[in-house]
Image (cartoon, rainbow, N blue to C red):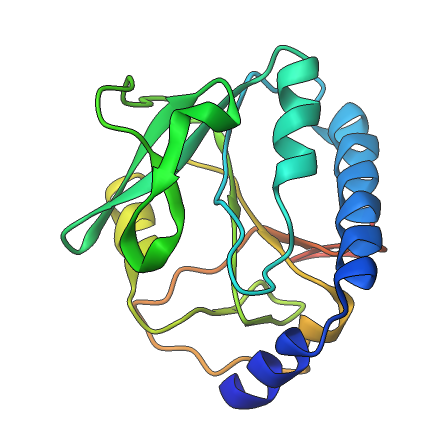
Length: 184
């Protein structure tokens, strides 16, 4: 499954990705107004190798005055730091954009966290890259609401999971928000 999803992601045309990312962004803000009207902080990733894009989301969050934080890899852990513009980023672990040194650590235990993945299922199970970074982060900070971000083809019938895998509360695609209990 991992190789199949990677191949599908690699085959996305740039113009198709841009359309999906913009649609995902509109879907997020439509649902945010409905479900999370008091949202003040969002932790999110910088997309890499065909992941669901986050730059449109970042720009929209900043326009609404919502604080944002992105992760920096520190050994085997993720640590989130507040960013206020794309200029706050530099190439880091695996050449993924990460916060520059010296930015303030984000310490918002109730911040929504938008999580990347290779595949998700309707129960919120997530297939990542096998490093366990997000599982360790959520083990240390379990109170965050967790939303996976994905394109429609990344939603699968069932994702194999281990006891230590931490599920998402919801998974957002450009068309649907899958929650553990219902589609919205």
